[in-house]
Length: 160
Image (cartoon, rainbow, N blue to C red; front, side, top):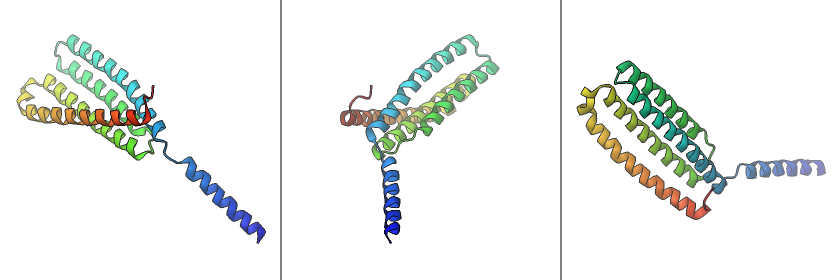
């Protein structure tokens, strides 16, 4: 009976360790997301500068523009994938991460639509309304994201 109690206690202790080890740390989660944001912001800024330079030198050659667009889209997908891979356990930081994903997706869709217009200027009229709607949604998402970020910074401090 004594051994049985020891086994039960050891099992309960193991469960307690596992449960505590998986506990959310909002400050650490927020720091992870902010580090991702800082690194990706630099990468995306570089990618946009490179995109603009290549577009300027492409002389509107449809094949070159297509290759440039695909290269940029691959970089955006890579950044999206890295954001999705962030392991965030805190519910409030998960909400921030989800809003960041939404804003990122809208911004990349907007960029892709704008590049489609560059590729095919005749499509500008048909894409204009969609671009306007996405612009509005992207601005709203960005404003919400900035508010969430300010709230989390106020709560957990600057992560830098």
